[in-house]
Length: 106
Image (cartoon, rainbow, N blue to C red):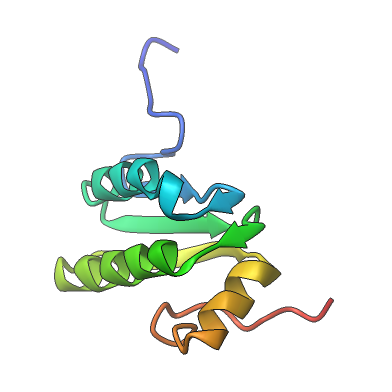
């Protein structure tokens, strides 16, 4: 009760990042800050289940983040991936690079 915790972090061993519904170039600055802060935790969980719109700039940021996390020895996983994000990543050939979970049938 007396300890303060970051709103999107659970225990210090895991950083959970919610990716916004509108994930396009205008908003990647805020997402970049959240992702950069996540490097303090050994386990990083991205939740992209709410993403409705995504552009190439946001996907590029996620690819760079995923590669940097791997280089730093951090474990990254997905809590959820929306159909729009999965489709955009697949169209650009990035679904495997981002290690996205298999697309769930509608």
